[in-house]
Amino acid sequence: MTSASTAEGLPPNPPAPAERKPFRSLSDGMAGHRNSLGVLRLVLAGLVIFSHAFPLGGWGDDPMRSWTRNQESIGGFAVVGFFAISGYLIAKSGAGSDILQFMWRRVLRIFPAFWLVLIVGAVIVGPIVWLMDGNRPGGYLTNLGAGGPVGYVLLNADLTIRQWGIYDIFISTPWGERGGASALNGSLWTLAYEWSCYLIIALFVLLGILKRAKWIVPLVTLFYFGVALSTIVAPGFAASIFPAFGDSFRITLTLIFLIGSCMGLYSRSIPLDDRLGILSAIVVVASLALGGWIIVGYPAFAYLLLWGASRLPQRVQWIGAKNDYSYGVYVYGFLVQQFTAYLGWHHWGYVPWVLATIIVTGGCAWLSWHLVEKRAMQLKDFGPGRGIRYWFDWARQRFGRNSEKIKAAPQE
Image (tube, rainbow, N blue to C red; front, top):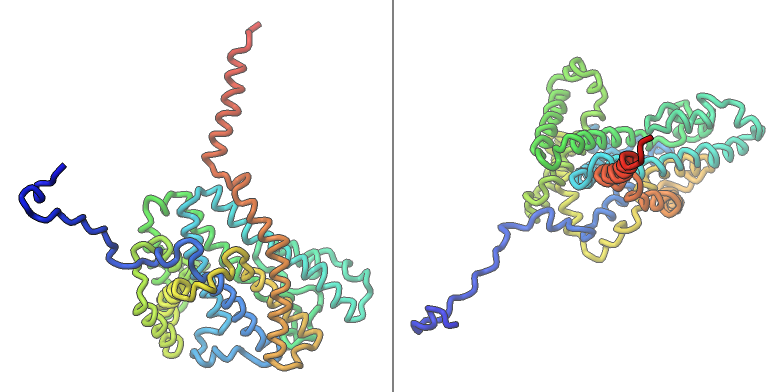
C-alpha cells in the first residue's frame, strides 16, 4: 500500500519519536538490585563500631559531637542513615503486600537474629567472662530472674531493652568503669524504635493508604517535622500534650524513617540528579557544622544516601545484594568490643583494636546471616507470607467443600 505522501511525490512520514521521560528518576537509579544500598549499610554499620570504640576503649566521647555542636555522633549519624534507608525499603515492601505478609516478613527479618545475639550473650559470652572472673560454674544460673542470664534473654525478647547486663559482667571494662554498671550490648536499643516505625507502616498497609492514599504519608511526615521543630522552639511543649514525645528519639528516628518512606513511595517522581546529590552533601555538612541537622540535614542526608546508592560504581553493587551482613555487624559490634576490651585488646591502640573487632564482628555477622537470617528469610513466602487472599481462598475451598458434603448427605 502506498502512503498519500509517497503518491504525491513527497518523502514518507518519519516514524514518531519514542516518548522520552523528562528526567531520570530515583526509581530508575534504584531499580532492582542495581544499586549499592548493601555497601552503604555495611559502611554505616562499620561507622557504629568506630563510634563506640571511643567510650568502649577508654578514649572518651565520640569526637564528632564536638565537631557538630553536640548535634550528632558518628554512631548517631550512622543510625540516622540506617533509618532513612530502612524507611525507603520498608515503604516499598508495604506497598506491595498485605498486612499479613508485611508483618510476617518484618518479624522474620528482625527477631530471629535479635534473639540469637541475646542467647549468644547469655549462653556463650556471659559464662566465659563469669569463669574468667574466678566465679563458680554453678553460680551463673543461680538467679533465674532479673539480673541473671535468663532474665537478660526474656526481659529483652520483645526488643525493648529492660536489662542491659548480666550480674557484674564487663564491669571492669572502660565502659563498665565509666558507667558503673554491666552492659553486654548497648547497640540493641534502636531496634525497638525501628519496630515502632514498622508498625506505623503496618497501619498504613492495613488502611490501604500506601496503595490508595499515599499522600497521607507525607502529611504524617510533616506532622513529625512540626513536632521536631517544636522541641527546638518550645522544648517540652510536645511532651506535655503527648508524653511519648518526651523521648526525643521517638521523634527524630521516626521522622527520618518517614522521610525515607516518602522517597520510596514517590521515587518515580523524584529526579536523580548529580547536582541535587552535590547540593544535598553540602547541606548535610553545613547543617552538621552550623546547626539545623534535624530540620534540613535529615531530608538532605536521605537523598544523599539514595543518590549515592545509585551512583556508586557498578562493580561494588554485588556487595550486600544477596548476603546482607549489615544487621549482623550492627547487633554484634558492641558485644564483640566489650568482650575484646575485657580481654585487654584495646591496649593495642585505637586503630589496631578497631580493625580486630571489625574482623571478629564480621565473622559473627557471617554466621548470623548464613545460620539464621538467610534461613528465616527463606520462609517469607510460606505460611502467613502467602497473604490474606491465599488463606481466604484456601478456607473458602476447604470449608465450602465440607459444607457441600454435609448438605449432600442423606437425612435420616
